[in-house]
Length: 249
Length: 212
Image (cartoon, rainbow over all chains, first blue to last red; front, side):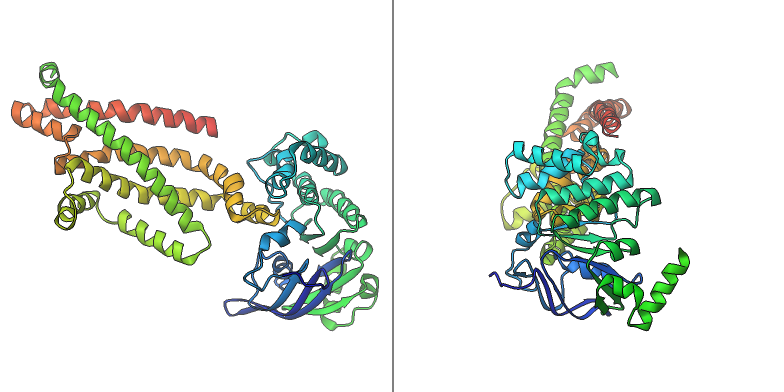
């Protein structure tokens, strides 16, 4: 059953790992085309939050409606959501047994049943876009982390998703690789694709995203315009967090 | 020794043939059962995991000889009579399948959760992710240990001797008792087993190098 609503909507969502209450009564609406950065200390639950959005982590109570389907409803076919919601991981998770080109064409072929010629054309265009066309026939193990992540973003884009979730996409990269990946993410944002980004890149959060969520201990503490947030955090917890980050630079 | 070999040639060849036949049948069924229970054990449904777990624990932890005896002596009392060859082959297949299941399961697990999460997030179903991403990688990991399982299976097929399965070991016993040349006979039996296991072992090593 399809429900008209925001592209992602949390209604009183709770999530537990055993006794640990990882997500505490989350209420959140993300609208189409928004670029939302989620920042916060490690262990705060921000990765858990983003992983519930495509059902990688099941929720324990509440409603979670993504692209019109309720993830909390057991009858929902989760693959309908995942066709429209891509994900980019900290450790890339490219298919090690497939070439770069096959990584991009595999899901469109077997999930969307798109013809091979079209898949190849789309894949090569995307590889060109992310600067990886010359590596089309390489295997993931032959690439650097930054290159792998660029391919992983292309893999997500090939499904023509409405939403892409980024779970710390630059955290495992060498510093000089980070900017390339951020530039591609900026390009994704410019395409009008809804993005949710768990990140430690404050530059990206401030400049590219148009909404910022500060997350701590399973709660959304702040949900605001990024520029305003970095100028004047509302909560002590956020001030504390930012002072640590900035003193590190 | 040569006289024993030529004098009892047909006994040895019968045994050798039965050992090969039993091994091939047991390999076939143990691979199918082993892969099936491995998939059951890694799949999300808890009931499937429990069933696979019980199966594997039972057949891994009872001696092969006991399993074979159960099929040879106990099943016929309640159901149908089975020959020693059949009972031994069934026992061998079930026993080996439990070890194969454990081998394949660890191969699948060593591929890593990231590959599955990547595939699922890309829109694939669990079955598609297994087929196109996880299993092709798991097979490469699992082939060397599976080769060892197959070699062990051939050697374990000598369990047929205990239930009159007419395999190489059983025929060797017959030759030894009737010729009284025990040492020579068992040396010949050993060489016959080597004739099966050594080529397999070398082939496995070759395959391992090619996959690495």
